Length: 169
Image 1 (cartoon, rainbow, N blue to C red):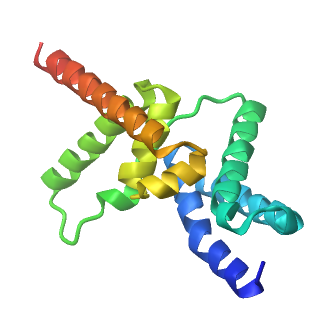
Image 2 (image 1 turned 180 degrees about the vertical axis):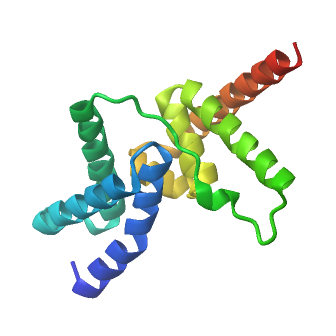
């Protein structure tokens, strides 16, 4: 693999993988460590990784390292509130509170979802990955991805509506 292509891949994708790890519950420090370990492992095995599958390989290694960390720490995977999303140019206390409540509600719903569906929602709507990128990352066919994403959206909607009814009652 060409060193310029390799450097570009690593620079572009490291931040996306780090953001994803933080979204699924890793601390920023843990996410940084996991990404660094994944890149190191990638550099060790670069000759055996197909260039068109390098991103999904990196993503999968990082995700497996995160799961290993969770098992070691025996903690439950949870989504954290992303404080950067709460920043507005001129936030009023009301806007800030509403946004924080919305983000907490979103995180609560995600934590109630099946793990695969949770990951799909985060990859598609939080990280804005295309269907092709998600297929590569999860090693999934596009038709399968679309049907799982359809089910994930329906599950999210059902959990949201259930929460709204509980709030009203």
